[in-house]
Amino acid sequence: MVQETQLSASNLIWPIFVIEGTGRTETISTMPGVERMSIDLAVTAAERAVELGIGAVAIFPVTPVAKKTERGDEALVAENLICSATRAIRQKCQDRLGIVCDVALDPYTTHGHDGIMIDNTIVNDLTVEVLCKQAVLQAQAGASVIAPSDMMDGRVGAIRTALDQAGFEHVILMSYAAKYASAFYGPFRDAVGSAKNLGGASKKTYQMDPANTDEAIREVALDIQEGADIVMVKPGMPYLDIVRRLHDSFSIPIAVYQVSGEYAMLRFASQASALNEEACVMESMLAFRRAGADAILTYFAPRVAEWLEKG
Ligand code: PBG
Image 1 (cartoon, rainbow, N blue to C red):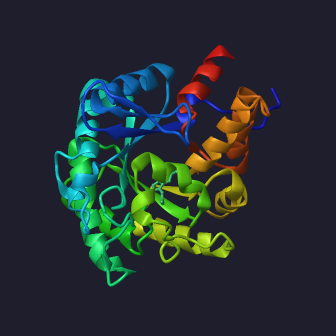
Image 2 (image 1 turned 90 degrees about the vertical axis):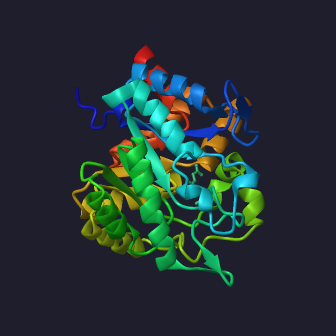
Image 3 (image 1 turned 30 degrees about the vertical axis):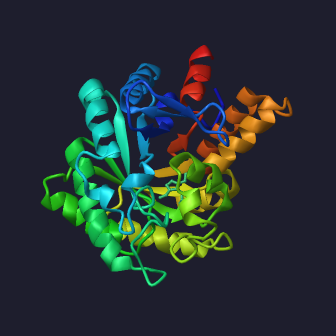
C-alpha cells in the first residue's frame, strides 16, 4: 500500500541483436544468456515480448563485415537487417508492440564510429544528413520509435523535420540525450562486432564526459527544444544521479539504458554464485524507477517480465 515505486513489464524495452540467415542464433561470450538471432527468431522473440506485456523491442543489427564501408552505406539500404527485421516484426505483432530503431552509423562503418569520418575527425553536419535518411527508412519499415544514439549535435531537430516531411509525424523520437563516453559499452561492441573496427579508439569527441552533470541538463534541454518526445540516460546504474536530476528538472518521459557492461556484471557475478540474480536485477529495476525513469532498456527484459508474472 505504501510502496512508492512500482515496476511493470510495460516499462521495459528489450534490446535484441539481429543477424542474417534463418533459424540461426549465435552466443555472445561477454554477454552469457543473450544471443544474436536471425530475423525469423527475432519475430518469435517479439511475439514472446507481446505475451509478456513488454513495451517495446529495440533492434540492433549485426552487419556482416563485407557490408561495412568507410561511409556506412548499408545504413541507407531499405532491405538492410534492421529495416527487414522491423518489417517482419511489425507485420506479425501489428500495434501490440513498440519497435525502437537505433539511428547511428557504427553498425555499418569500417571504423566503428557513429558518424562519417574525414581525416580522422567525425563530421557532424554531413553525418546528420545521413542519419535523417536512415530514420525515414526505419519509419517506413514500421518503427514506432526512432532512437538516435549517435550524439551528433542538432540531429534531433533535423530528424524530426525529416520524419514530419515524410509523413511520419506520429513516430516517437527517443533521443539518447545524455549518453556518456562509457567503458561499460564493451560487450555491446563485441555483440555488434564494432569493437574490432574501433580498435580501442574512443567516442569522446561526441559522447559525454563521465565527469559532467550540468552538461546533461544542457543536452536534454536542447533535445527537448528540438522535438524529442523521450530522453534517455545511458549507462544506467552508474548514472542514477543524472536520471534523478533530469526527472527533477524537466517534465518529459525519461528512459534509462542498463547497458551491456552492467548486464555482464550482474550476469557473471550471478553465475559465480556471488549474487542472487533475480533479487539483484529486480532491485536494479526498482532503482531506475525510483530515480525517475519511465522506460528501462535492459537485456534482462524477458526475464524481468517472467519474474513479475511469477510475483
Ligand atoms: C552505438 C550504441 C552503443 C550502444 C547502443 N548504441 C555503443 C556505443 O556507443 O559504442 C551501447 C549499448 C550497450 O552497451 O548495451 N550507437
